[in-house]
Image (cartoon, rainbow, N blue to C red; front, side, top):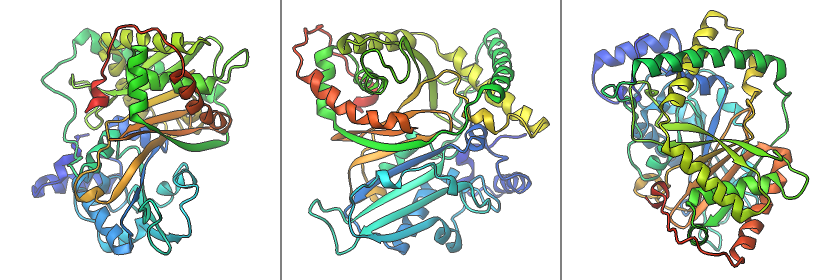
Length: 442
């Protein structure tokens, strides 16, 4: 199948548009890369939400959506009747937007968060929704007139897209792989074989061992960036190492009773890497890495161990793991095409021993007409049926922690800020190191 980039449709080339329409008419997700297909089939979703000084109505919300689609043309993909890269007619805008009045913002944004299953309920509607709640009687004492939320299939948007849209910048993808940077034949063959092997092993294990559906919880937390920066410097660790350690240590618990693991916390975390190659996915910028954090009750020792683990991982070439993952997505898609009953719904609930996924998205800085009037903190997160996820979203003043997790873990989220305050009060011997995270200082 010929592949098309997400930005290929944001132009006037009639021939390209005709090819795209022909592919979409044959199958709504025909233009998805293998990674996009994987996230679509898993029904993974993402969300963005923030308060605003503007009071939205149906027309202004529709105009906002039209601007979003112009900046992120991939939002026009993936549904029956889609016209990739073209503006939405009014009936589609009306169907995917919603405005309501509320008496109070108490409980927001958490009361809005969920799996967003409604996105997939009707196959002839775009794979995202935009809603606003407007405060009845006008702005509150903090100047907040409304709260807005964007929810989307993860197949269409990633964290870097959200960051770009927040700055009113183009989030069109183009071709994300670097065809000029060739992965060696040996590494490609090894990664492909490992990917196919992992596919068959995971499909088998998932259908035998996947747990039943569990109750899921959703919660957000906002922390001042300055607090985290000062403490990271005091500890001599990266800011992301501190955030990863705070979350995993608090969620796992102290003492004999551990909620995730007594010895090692299996984690996956994501990062952006500018060293692209020809085996990278053509849509997604993000890359995933695996980590194992040794459990230690002493938090200072633990956070420094987490930092050392991250340092070791990121000094290695992550190409082999990425080639394997992309090969696995391709193998799963091919398997599903040949045998549509595989990998089966149980597959998507199998986590393969990963206790938590830690996602640090690029800084969200409001700028331009897209986010005019929006107020920090900004909340941004993701949901996957098998993963306990914490998404870290840095802004100018705040970092928000956005949790989509098994309900049994949600109560421990309240322990994070208490742990932070406890460590801040400690008399910690300096290491002499001052580490700045490039991805957090942007």
